[in-house]
Length: 117
Image (tube, rainbow, N blue to C red; front, top):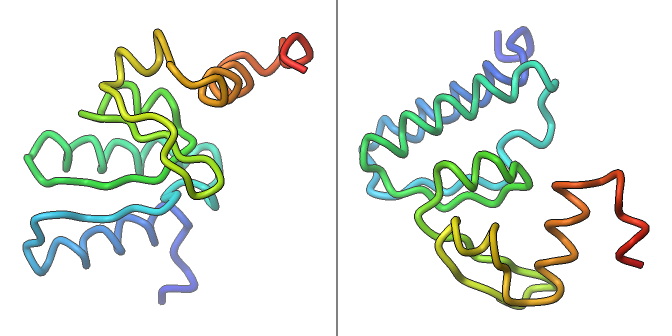
């Protein structure tokens, strides 16, 4: 049966299984990375609902719009080093570290990457 589930369905089952133990915190490591683009929104919506329910979530993600909307705090890590910790509004509007600025420009404006090199 699990082999018949889509990637998005498998993620939702994994989230439901994690919730069965009534955790205080849930860890997500790139929960949308292997999903079909059409399924990403479904999984992010489940996570958004969880965030609003009060469950603490630690999420490793490249989904910047999701992080901007849902996170209480953004931690930018590069090469295993924490380079910046900030509220989302501050991080996305005025990243302090040059590496964070380069990352955001490349991710949020991929057509203009060459201006950074």
